[in-house]
Length: 197
Image (cartoon, rainbow, N blue to C red):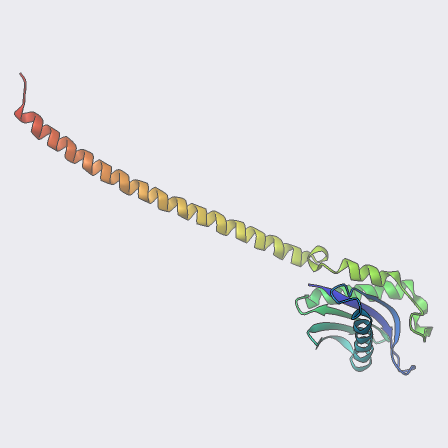
């Protein structure tokens, strides 16, 4: 599960294209010479989705999920993740980022050039949400439940294995008991003929 980029944009149809207010990227999985092209593509996708969508939506694009939130006031955010990343966590991150951005940069409505309202919280959001299990309580609980479930399965298997061994011991002791009874009867018969008085 990985977050590739987080973008904060402004779109009120008053500029030719959405304005990129702030962006953060983690392109470490790409080669050095590919990173520039990938970053441009991510920026293009973020602008296009902001222009064409409203509300909260997930869009699949070339093997990645684009989590898009476009508010009615024109503030928008796009988080690009891999396909495994949970949408609920992504939308939680994007909503939180937009709220923080709106409070820290109240002049964002007047910005008409890219990077005109840069916000360090965007980079912090990208780093914080790289591992969704660390920030999402429900995922943490699910991971703990899976771990507990695995331990329980191992314990049950061990108990069943012990039960099988106990059954084998009981069977062996029954066999020994039957053999000892036969030995006792045989010894009694043998001893009858040789009675010493």
